[in-house]
Image 1: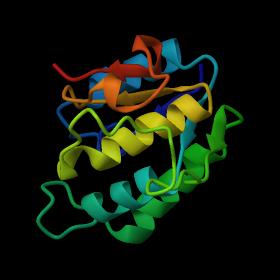
Image 2: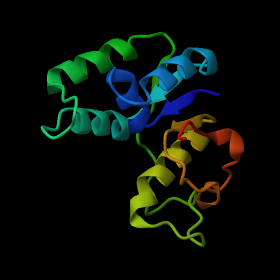
Image 3: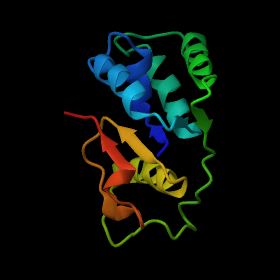
Image 4: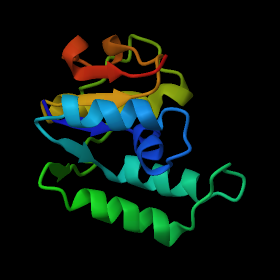
Length: 144
């Protein structure tokens, strides 16, 4: 399965001082043999967070974009469009409570399921049951 790297994983990859940088940089080459993916949500989130003035290891936006561009040149990378319409889609099981803070995680999980991939995250609170067809293989949490 191709691994959709969420924003937290991209941040840990680009920020060498991030607490999870060693974990992520060791996990990726061993576990993403089928490649990795990004999407507008994860890319924009990475740029937004890493370039904020209050981020501890702030990087200028052009440096973050440059790092992402370089990583995306890998033949293992695939770009996935954000093409699931949350309001019209039947991929979400709204019987399971999705708090507003969980919506982006649920969307990224749905995107991974739609592409027969897995969402790789540092978050531990993502619920598989909120996305129809999601199973444990669709979610990898590296959070501790």
